[in-house]
Image (cartoon, rainbow, N blue to C red; front, side, top):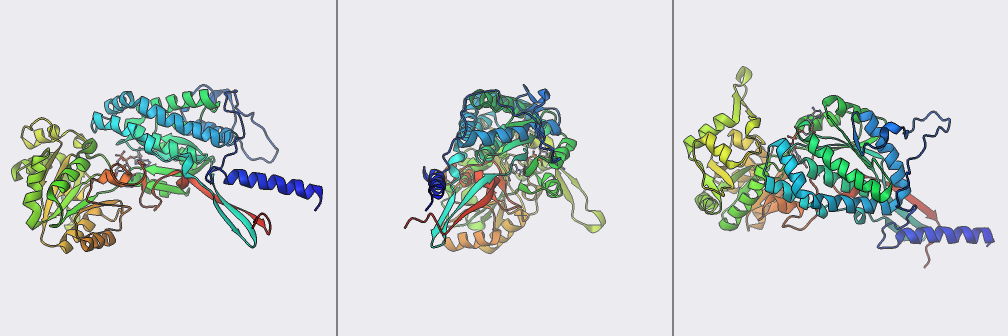
Length: 503
Ligand code: NAD
């Protein structure tokens, strides 16, 4: 073998072993992480392809831009810098986002609560304290194969700039978790936040970028459009640097994203049903239902939104709910609240009447709902509940209020069928309280949801009291599931023919 070939093979072996080291995680670090004013110069190679420029307008903004064009240009430049920074830079970004989310949880929870005026301050703070549970760089491990024909490595590599849309219900938590996932995979990101939760999002983006710049020299790896609009959404989706979309929101934005022609990962709406059978522990079921449905005043897309319960255990379940912090509305109180919380438009041409949720009640405290129902609540009330029929607006609408409708059913089959109907084929989340494995299996098969939680509160499905990992973006209609760094990667295969299998 010639010296050249030996040297070449030694280099390739060193590279491959380096990549397979450390439990398979890629370990090579290409550049120092010290800040060094690293903005690349705009270069033209003469091929006519447009490149991100490092115009002075992009400096000193720390990710907060007036237009999608500026934000995408800056994010593209940061993506190239991140590529140079290697795994070490990604790891640093993950550490910074997790540490700042925790450190600023109280302050950021407060500004988000003051801006959006929905949910609960204590739970807004708690959500930011959970960002440390979102999987990051260590999640990405290349797959290697070795055989008679040599060795092959499949690596999870970045796309480039990801365009991300965040909801009003969890603005900074969704944004922060998305950054951990997206940047761990080596991408940069541009956010178009919900207009009613955009100021707090920009505060977090600026703080993240300032710290990331200090530690890595990369300035705009996380960008945001300061005043988001439908036009800025369209501009973000159309921008040539935007390679992939991540949308977290309701049906309209999912539809809009899917019509852009870009690949979209969609974390869409839900209307999670709960089915309770007569084999469950009513106390455990009641406590779990209250803790899931009351969390952040039921803003979570996974939160329990309606309960179907077998007739023979319904009274016991409701008694246990009353003993554990929930208050039952009687039929006339429930009717008053329904009139206030929904606008019902009569059906056109013999069609069904349509209920529209009154935004003034979304994510509000139980005391606000109780006032509309005409009752005073004991302090510490977490949740309201009341008996309804299966077609009631509180059952059919994704109402996001701390008011849980309870529907009696006569059989397991009816409970599963009504759960399925009320979930509206979102394939998002369903919950069962049962110790009968056949009932559990039947519901899992019928509902076919992305998350299916048994005998626990819905957040257990996101690793909060159940096994698993956390993300605030659960990709439902597009099928990626609970997002993680791998969701934002391209799989690339590198093949060495005949050599490098050493035994
Ligand atoms: P929303 O749909 O009103 O807004 C979500 C985002 O989409 C916002 O940034 C908004 O500005 C944007 N948007 C809305 N309509 C749009 C359109 N036509 N074109 C472009 N952008 C548009 O939702 P919200 O009230 O902020 O959040 C609650 C909804 O999000 C619920 O339906 C909930 O289930 C869902 N959600 C889903 C997940 C998940 O992981 N699957 C997580 C959180 C929230």
